[in-house]
Length: 186
Image (cartoon, rainbow, N blue to C red):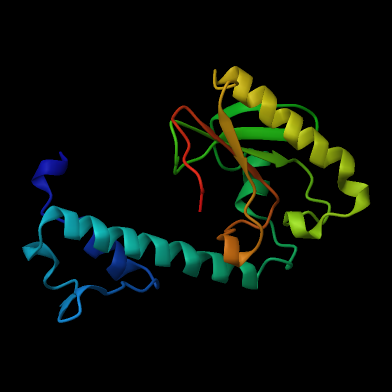
């Protein structure tokens, strides 16, 4: 099915239907790639263009999300907790929910969230009163790793704020595994 789609028509359509900017990448000091010349480039150059666009889109989305971080409005995670949006649940107890990420960055990529935000839009907002739920989130991450068969090697990531590309302001842990992790991560 993907073979019948002209090269990068999906990317062009995505850029045309969103408010996110499409970046320009300079390959050599004298040569600039634009979206109009993209189809003439070798596939490696196209991957560079797409990666740069995706990175800038993540940063733009994080900045936009930060603008509404403390509004108190329901997040997508609140809607998942309320079962208004379907998810693939990996683990659940009375205080924590863990479900598969819709854009996995590893063979195993599960998000672990508190069911009640209680002001925990990000780790930087944690107070002493949040100690119990923070511990429960980490313990749930261990249970997820065990259930997913990655207990011998996994990573737990918390993005805090727009500089870390946090795009949902409801504290969440990413449990990543199933492949060799690299260092440094960012």
